[in-house]
Image (cartoon, rainbow, N blue to C red; front, side):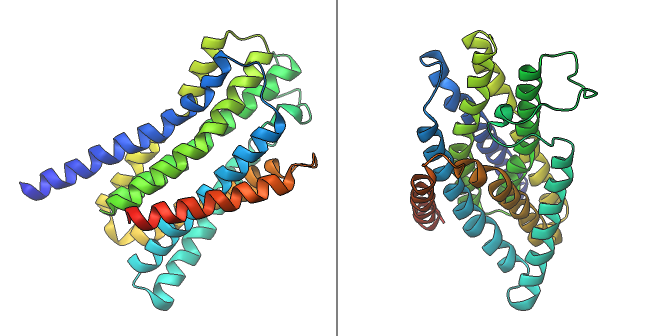
Length: 270
């Protein structure tokens, strides 16, 4: 009975943590009630910090535990090797369905006319393709939190939830501001940002469930989540923060700050 309660508590806490990380998109969108735009310099700094936070959380709360769970040495490293590449490939496949899905992608080229969003204006199509892409990418982030908790590593799970929640804040703002520019009411732009993060607890429950059912898969699921996170960082967050606008060095320094702060928190919480 005690083991059952312990397992239930892990699932419940993991669900709440992934839910909180998802709801952070709404926290990031709160400025939409007071502002119509945010300087690109501030967004780049936020994205740089988010990239650093996610890199540290991925390294210390996913990759290192994956190697340890795999038995360490060549066995653990091999499990991490396979899982990371599989996670990155999975996100790449998902990304092929959303060719203009990078952060703030509403400034990119117009999608093809035969898309699902063809009935919308070009600007609105770009915004909604971006929102859908962010929502789908939130799923593996929630799964990463769930996998952390599913392995019984409460500290790692909390660290991941905290890091991903911080990373979700600029995403929430990046969703709300284009909607505001397209004429959406402030409350509706905020609500859409909140809803985009609600797939994370679904991914969290899946991650917890997979590990609880098939514990030998733990090193692979941890590494898979790490690979998905690394793909998002390298393909979307860092390139967007490094656009040629004179803010690239600022974004680099905020990345370093985000990384060391998250490294410190991970070490303390771990």
